[in-house]
Length: 230
Image (cartoon, rainbow, N blue to C red; front, top):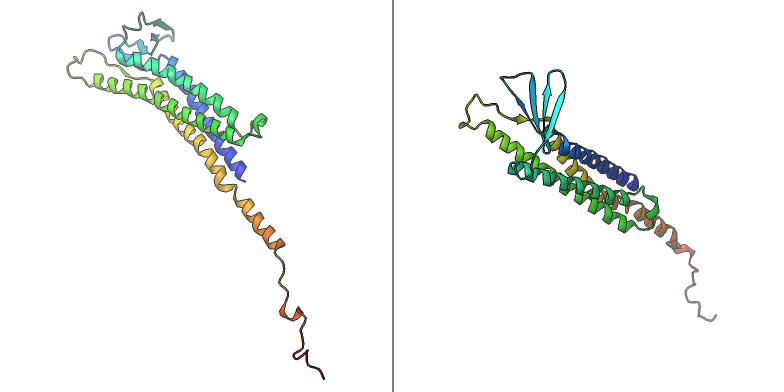
């Protein structure tokens, strides 16, 4: 029962973390961080990502152009590109460590302490990856909100709005953090339930091995005044 509960917690954490890591990778390279609708030309939709800008026309055709220079980008996009790549690397490292520490990994069945450490390290790295993912997404969203409500910009000028990749990035960071916490708590789940069976077994063994007390009437009775000589 304890091992099955521990295994369920581990598999749940791995599934959430893996889903969050894949979503984070998609968020990093998808050119959908911001979108812009031009009132003068409603047939085109501009999308901005960390690596390129794309224009989607009404016919469905999409043209993308990579940024000419990394240093020419705004500060939030430069830092976001670095942090998202770091998050993807941390997620991959956490996935490898956690995979080797799972209970269903047969080669290391005789090393339970090592597997617990690998699972804990993998869960901590997944949590760090989630925080690193949430930081650039939230920063870009904050700057987008400030620019959208900036009164110094004329109303005629179109404003950038949230793209689909930003929402995907928030979900990715959330799943990474939750999955990492589940992996960190998985050794505790097995530790709290495993002693139940050995404790009951010890009580049963003690009850069987305890010598039965002989009743009082079973002891040989010595007659009083046995040493008197008649």
